[in-house]
Image (cartoon, rainbow, N blue to C red; front, top):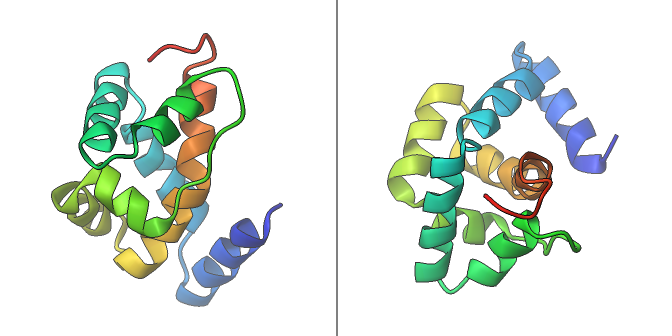
Length: 113
């Protein structure tokens, strides 16, 4: 398990909730083809389209920072995720930066959204 995965577990245990389940559920909500296309469009607007396309393509996934995730998803989507998970943005954004590239990559195995 990654360092971030261990941290997510420790935080979840400290506050008495299964953060992995909450994060997996919310990441899954971002992974239908229409949502992935929206993410690509938002990433293009933010100048981050190459990063998101690397997650969809068959090569290596380019890393993304929590601030870039916020730019890609937009403030309203981040606030929706904060509301649905009960996690503060300061916890949610780093977790999404870690998990979302791999989740998109696995959801698009043929290199298309």
